[in-house]
Length: 203
Image (tube, rainbow, N blue to C red):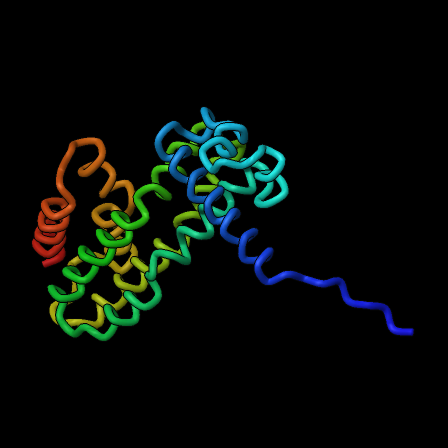
């Protein structure tokens, strides 16, 4: 006699998924506001309105949550489609303008995620590896943009590697954070100045 398959309730699965999403959202907000080291699982549970054991059962430990935040930040940024559009542009100015706007959109839209990661670095057991994992796709995208700029006329006066480094300097997460968070610039003003700075320098 064939064994019965365990019954899985779609409604229960949906409720579990909503709970998981809520826990992760609240954890991201708390990590961004207070810093990873100052947030406990109990804090996350209270913010999400669940028990601590539900947090562990649904998403795991604080470390598991931080790993999810890093991975989600990469996939949710939409950089792949933005890069496809950028590589179709045929003038250096339009490429730099797309970089300025695209990285602004990504950093602004994923602000809580970036802050959560940034504040976790000093206390994480392997902060350097965490940062590299969080920014690998970002760096690769800017390197691809640098290579593309060197196929256009006029090309940058720097090497491809130096151009990629400069794009990271201007449009990487640290540049945006320095202007907007540390110095209180608006996102609009930061985008405008970074674009003009990059265009002038690359000429």
